[in-house]
Image (cartoon, rainbow, N blue to C red; front, side, top):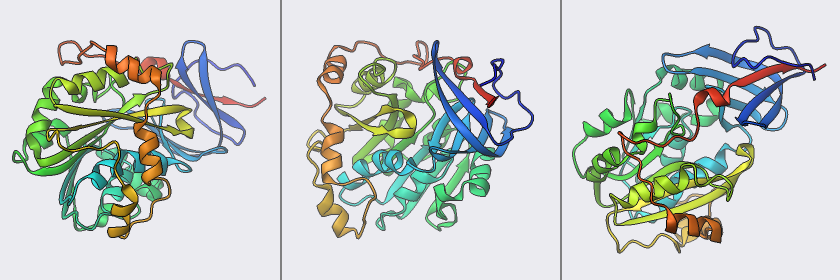
Length: 328
């Protein structure tokens, strides 16, 4: 490969044979061979790209960070949405913060009991771009009459809703990055607001970043410990998402301590609701919630609390600048 200067969005043309390099950290990068650039632009909030790659199909990339891939997005989105939705006896109102691709919305609306799903994403350009260039994510969910899409700040959008009004709240946000738009939505201040919006028996779930034994200390365990400052019962769970090249973390929290989510019989509920998943079932659920010893130890020993005044970041957005490079 030819040498390339580290420029996040510097190349002007992208011929067949180019590679996209995602800089994960100093000395470590992930490279994808790019077949076609489907979209490249700048919204008010971030750089946005959609590229078709050899190993994972179309990738959605924001600020140089790969957000999801066509070939395995169902693993992430089913893992995020369904443990909470299946655990709730009758989810009627659901709130999604973020989720601009529309895939989390798609999964929520598969449950016929849902009467309304309020989705608030700050970047309308990303929503519109995904509807045009990656329609497989939303699969028509934006046109469902149960969808109420709001382009705006998720915290403000949630604050405007009545207390006790949501059965399930899902935060499908970008990682908490220094300079990114989402870090305040991983703090005690936001979680206290969110807790008030849950109906009795309500369930909250958030994506929580890398959760491998090597990386879980960055934000997975701090998010878990931060949630324990607000909720009486918190679960951490993980699943391997191939295109993320990592075990990925989620945290789920409830106000009702009688709820036990670790041993949910997902198959029985899915059958009753007429749902068949590509990935999620009872065995997958129990595997997700069976954390390995290093993560359990990490959670038990975690002392950091994420606040607006003292946030924690996965990394700087500058660290993850994407680079296009032409094959020599």
